Length: 328
Image (tube, rainbow, N blue to C red; front, top):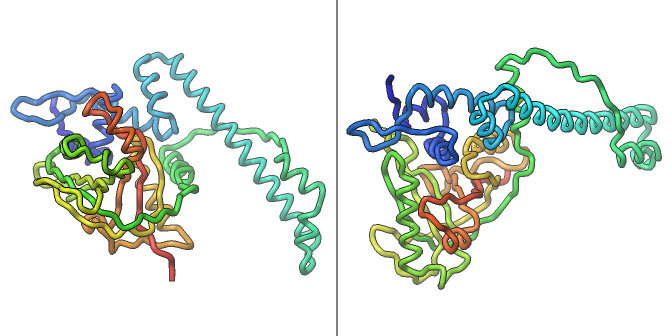
């Protein structure tokens, strides 16, 4: 049995090390300790489980649903979970089909009139208004067919296109910067951040402190080590002890998408949204330079620091922030 390091598994499956650690925290997988090696490793059994998780995620099952399937390990239970998901998908299909039929009716009305400045007449059409208001209850047969993996991949690409991106403006701010460099730097940097917040009693002076994070540097070295940096907002004249560093940040405009902790794969969806946007383009000339301005805002910082029962606790919600500017 050959053990693979967390960095190796991350590269093979294109999953961040944070996601792997999160899977471990919620009990989906379990790491092993290799003699003479301080970091997480995974055996063939875990690799097989990861493959199953990835396939089930492509079927749009939640991590909780996947956990239930893997833990029960019974065909009948898996069928029940999948049938529940199928019912949910069919509901979405019907809703989209209803919208499609309303659009087709709208087009037919426009084609029938085909006169200049007659759009208002179409919009006053009672039948059309009733149809759109009620969203016509039209059921069509749904013929199941064999789905190839490439079909599933394409379907997920379409469904994963994010549509409700918020445009936010971060103001200029003063920050304390904490950075760690290791094979699992996020946990190390977070422990340093918690220590700083507690010892400085920061929240007494800035109850609305915000926390941002990003890889720095993002590319692992030959040993699989990389960096992660946290920023926390502070009052202008607040004292920041070594090894932390006091910085200023200019802020700017961002596309924001909120995720539950662990769903870091949604960065790709956010990038795809930005690449296909008609109003905005990437603005790479931003801090942090090494990450082209990408940031993660760890939401509800006050609640996190004042109610945590463990220093291993994660922020439950994270805003993925991608730097934008308006197209010329």
